[in-house]
Length: 256
Image 1 (tube, rainbow, N blue to C red):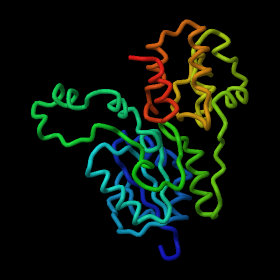
Image 2: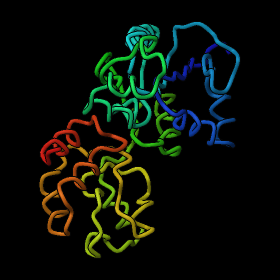
Image 3: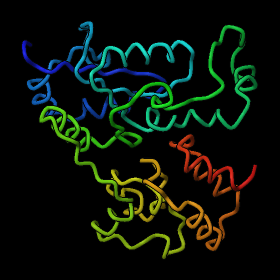
Image 4: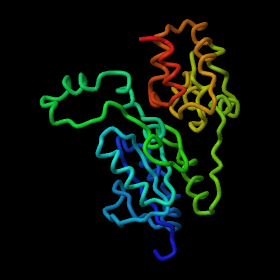
């Protein structure tokens, strides 16, 4: 292990899907294991080596006081910290709690709600500590993850497309679903999925979060022309990346 970069993978409030994307690399994972020391990865190994770590991959959002303290400890132990997935980069689908009364949810679900200790909001890792890079998606794209790891080992910036899903649609030769009358979040959504849903004649659900400077208001206006009600627009922007500022702001612009 001497001389190898030390990798740690951490889980906060999430479904584990982004960690599984690393394990899904299969053949490539063997090359990763040869190139780095996987020092801490509870999802894949019982070996729990102590820090410091050269690179920490963090999945999940912050939903408890305990995790708010824990992420600061992770940051102190990590030379580079990269958030992976919608939960870590934008609060995840659990950030729907941000628009409601969490106390009511807890009282309705748990027989003894006084035992539950949780925050009123679900927030991305960047709200709590410095993040060196964000890898979007629900789940993340394993090719982008491998590019991230390769860039880290080479000491360069990752080459991750900042284009929208519309670019991927053009690359696949898809016919625009909005031209066919189907509401789609593709024009304001970060690329990375390969335009999976539009390729099946379904509108994009925004899994990879907002692009830089997305014109969500213009897109919402186009949705209205297609017959979408304010409730439909609000719900579309409140899915996997509900707490992303651009999506949150647009959802709030369409009332309750």
